Length: 387
Image 1: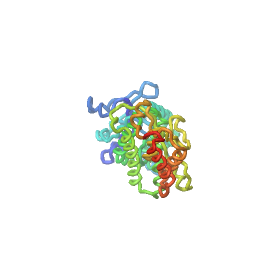
Image 2 (image 1 turned 120 degrees about the vertical axis):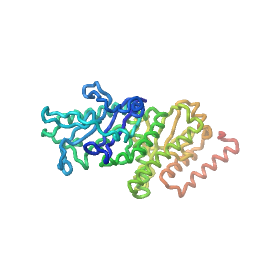
Image 3 (image 1 turned 90 degrees about the horizontal axis):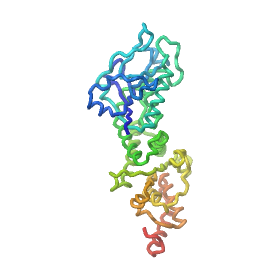
Image 4 (image 1 turned 90 degrees about the vertical axis):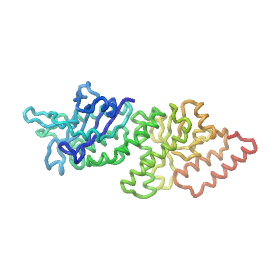
């Protein structure tokens, strides 16, 4: 991939005008661009409005710099070439580019590699916002009442950045309405993006916008359920638990790959989760998100453990199933879980046990244990397929 989304933030102690967060879109990583030219960001990009531009810096701001923006909603405007500060020129009745933002702004960044579909949709959405606010100025009568009106505390540049990134499935961890605070989460956002790309490199369905949103929502469902089950956390505990979940998913994936980590394996993920209502209503509903149904939510019914990848998931109690496109790879990786034909009782028992563990109801899995013993007895008597 050669599509990069970067979050930039003016530091509160090194601001140009006022601390500000904005988005950069480039086909080359800023880290690479910097090697060729340390001041690469001074380039003025062509407008994306007329179709010539597909890169640049974009940010959201208020058109009136006075106390009204703190307590009221005023006109908001999305700016292109937002690496520069734009000022309204009373003579020509237009905004014009003035000073470049401080150097520290361009080193205080969070670089994320995304898919072409994510990049293109982000570009389309930003273009729409630019067009919606193109006539907004300090002298205009336009005062947006929707999300493109501006308020310094509740609808500002940082919240616009979050909104845009979330629309294409990028996990931003925690919404901060103070721009300078966003940079506190840069290491977490980068870490999550790396794990997401590891999954997506195996399953290209995750490079779609629907796939990336499904991946993010799958983790969020588990976080919300865990939060419900274990009471409330502080926001830092929330972040720690989200990171723990991403790390757990990554480690579960690495255990499957083991000796094949360096290979370019391709497969398909089915994501499994428990809705928080399961803990409130004491039901046993488990759900799946799969590219087979464009990631629409479906009930997780009884899955056949004859399929080795299913059996692996059941035995390891992990919240996803990974089927490789190459059947030979499936056989190689899941050979220990190729049980052949199994009893109906075992199928029911291992599905029930898996549900119980996901629901945290591990006090009584006697039914599963009894069926497993039956399976092992048959294996010993050579009347069952060898494991």
